[in-house]
View (cartoon, rainbow, N blue to C red):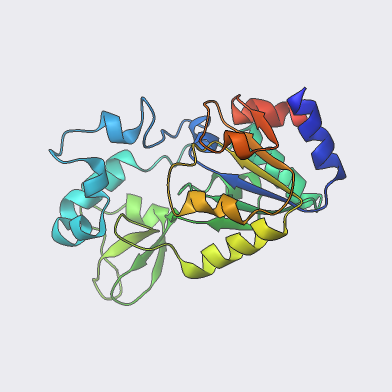
Length: 241
């Protein structure tokens, strides 16, 4: 059974890296972007596609609409970590898991106890003034009306996420590449591996224990050493029994 084989690989490994996508958070009630009930398909009241609203140019030109959308559709402060988040945090505490690399912009891995989390697309839980650089938490943004302004210089306070048209952080990408290239076991979960350049990180893995956990088939399934088509939370719950 594939889950049993994964359990054995984890038990005998000293260097596991996890690379996760939206499917890790959907089980906590946070919708993904491209799924059947995803954000990109369910929001239409603004007259433009969500991808456009979440672009750098739209943020600059239509800042008020950007903030209205951001606060209404992207914030899920009451979401709780699920079995996958807690299992990964436990493996890290045991010294087996070296890093969590995530495409998600929530903080569920941190809430579950993970320490070494590389956020490829940033996080909604960290915001900063584009004028003076002062950092603000999510509560500050939630409690503000309209465009969030800096209390020190009145500059715009934006979420520390990678918008469309913006580049991924080179330092974070560099760390992710290093961890993946050195891993004994690479577990990829909750992602269709369709979003680049993040999906391209899998190409840096040099080992022979590539595990893909996703409900649907991915274009990388034929390259994996182990494929499990299940909810990722259910898989980790069985692994940690």
